[in-house]
Image 1: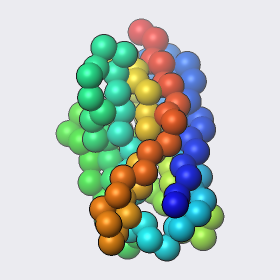
Image 2: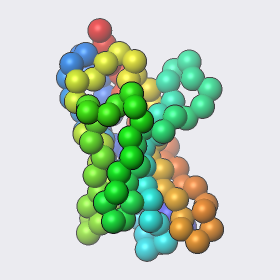
Image 3: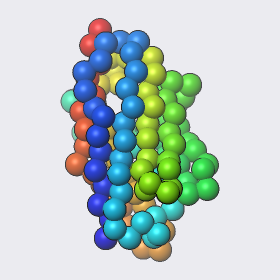
Image 4: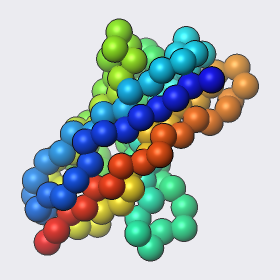
Length: 118
Protein backbone atom coordinates (compact mmCIF):
# COMPACT_ATOMS: atom_id res chain seq x y z
CA UNK A 1 0.00 0.00 0.00
CA UNK A 2 1.24 3.48 -0.91
CA UNK A 3 -0.13 6.81 0.26
CA UNK A 4 0.47 9.99 -1.73
CA UNK A 5 -0.04 13.50 -0.37
CA UNK A 6 0.23 16.56 -2.58
CA UNK A 7 0.97 20.12 -1.48
CA UNK A 8 1.91 23.46 -2.99
CA UNK A 9 -1.14 24.38 -5.04
CA UNK A 10 -2.64 27.84 -4.98
CA UNK A 11 -3.50 30.96 -6.90
CA UNK A 12 -0.89 32.59 -9.14
CA UNK A 13 -0.93 35.17 -11.90
CA UNK A 14 -0.13 34.25 -15.46
CA UNK A 15 3.63 34.16 -15.97
CA UNK A 16 4.23 33.17 -12.37
CA UNK A 17 5.66 30.00 -10.84
CA UNK A 18 4.61 27.32 -8.39
CA UNK A 19 6.22 24.16 -7.08
CA UNK A 20 4.11 21.14 -6.22
CA UNK A 21 5.31 18.41 -3.89
CA UNK A 22 4.12 14.84 -3.46
CA UNK A 23 5.20 12.91 -0.41
CA UNK A 24 4.92 9.14 -0.57
CA UNK A 25 4.71 6.68 2.30
CA UNK A 26 4.22 2.93 2.58
CA UNK A 27 5.65 0.30 0.22
CA UNK A 28 7.81 2.75 -1.69
CA UNK A 29 10.21 0.09 -2.95
CA UNK A 30 7.46 -1.29 -5.20
CA UNK A 31 7.18 1.97 -7.11
CA UNK A 32 9.28 2.63 -10.19
CA UNK A 33 7.37 5.32 -12.08
CA UNK A 34 5.77 8.39 -10.54
CA UNK A 35 4.07 11.27 -12.21
CA UNK A 36 1.74 14.23 -12.23
CA UNK A 37 -1.63 14.36 -13.95
CA UNK A 38 -4.16 17.17 -14.07
CA UNK A 39 -7.88 17.61 -14.56
CA UNK A 40 -9.21 20.93 -15.75
CA UNK A 41 -12.42 22.34 -14.20
CA UNK A 42 -14.39 21.38 -17.27
CA UNK A 43 -12.36 18.28 -18.03
CA UNK A 44 -13.72 14.79 -17.91
CA UNK A 45 -10.41 13.01 -17.61
CA UNK A 46 -7.04 13.34 -16.04
CA UNK A 47 -4.33 14.24 -18.50
CA UNK A 48 -0.68 13.35 -18.20
CA UNK A 49 1.59 16.23 -17.25
CA UNK A 50 4.91 14.53 -16.60
CA UNK A 51 6.43 11.29 -15.35
CA UNK A 52 9.76 10.32 -13.82
CA UNK A 53 11.24 6.88 -13.22
CA UNK A 54 13.36 5.81 -10.28
CA UNK A 55 16.34 6.09 -12.60
CA UNK A 56 15.54 9.70 -13.42
CA UNK A 57 14.10 9.34 -16.92
CA UNK A 58 11.43 11.95 -17.57
CA UNK A 59 8.55 12.41 -19.96
CA UNK A 60 6.43 15.53 -20.51
CA UNK A 61 3.19 16.47 -22.19
CA UNK A 62 3.77 18.75 -25.16
CA UNK A 63 1.75 21.52 -23.51
CA UNK A 64 4.19 21.85 -20.61
CA UNK A 65 7.54 21.10 -22.23
CA UNK A 66 10.05 23.83 -21.52
CA UNK A 67 7.95 25.27 -18.69
CA UNK A 68 7.55 22.44 -16.18
CA UNK A 69 10.24 20.29 -14.57
CA UNK A 70 9.56 17.04 -12.75
CA UNK A 71 12.02 15.65 -10.25
CA UNK A 72 12.16 13.20 -7.38
CA UNK A 73 14.20 12.83 -4.23
CA UNK A 74 14.28 9.10 -3.57
CA UNK A 75 15.88 9.60 -0.17
CA UNK A 76 12.92 11.74 0.92
CA UNK A 77 10.32 9.73 -1.03
CA UNK A 78 9.15 13.02 -2.48
CA UNK A 79 8.42 14.10 -6.02
CA UNK A 80 8.25 17.69 -7.26
CA UNK A 81 6.80 19.62 -10.15
CA UNK A 82 8.36 23.01 -10.79
CA UNK A 83 5.96 25.05 -12.91
CA UNK A 84 7.20 28.22 -14.59
CA UNK A 85 5.56 30.69 -16.95
CA UNK A 86 2.14 29.47 -15.90
CA UNK A 87 -0.81 30.10 -18.20
CA UNK A 88 -4.54 30.29 -17.46
CA UNK A 89 -4.98 27.00 -19.31
CA UNK A 90 -2.78 25.33 -16.69
CA UNK A 91 -5.61 25.82 -14.19
CA UNK A 92 -6.54 22.37 -12.92
CA UNK A 93 -6.47 19.97 -10.03
CA UNK A 94 -3.06 18.34 -10.09
CA UNK A 95 -2.82 14.73 -8.97
CA UNK A 96 0.20 12.79 -7.87
CA UNK A 97 0.44 9.28 -9.32
CA UNK A 98 2.54 6.21 -8.62
CA UNK A 99 2.64 2.97 -10.58
CA UNK A 100 3.40 -0.24 -8.76
CA UNK A 101 5.96 -2.14 -10.80
CA UNK A 102 4.78 -5.72 -10.27
CA UNK A 103 1.00 -5.40 -10.33
CA UNK A 104 0.72 -2.18 -12.37
CA UNK A 105 -1.65 -0.89 -9.70
CA UNK A 106 -2.22 2.85 -9.85
CA UNK A 107 -2.01 4.95 -6.70
CA UNK A 108 -3.40 8.49 -6.64
CA UNK A 109 -3.23 11.41 -4.28
CA UNK A 110 -6.29 13.51 -3.49
CA UNK A 111 -5.12 16.39 -5.66
CA UNK A 112 -4.13 20.00 -5.21
CA UNK A 113 -5.76 22.91 -7.01
CA UNK A 114 -3.70 25.26 -9.14
CA UNK A 115 -5.46 28.39 -10.37
CA UNK A 116 -3.76 30.72 -12.84
CA UNK A 117 -5.38 34.12 -13.30
CA UNK A 118 -5.00 36.16 -16.46
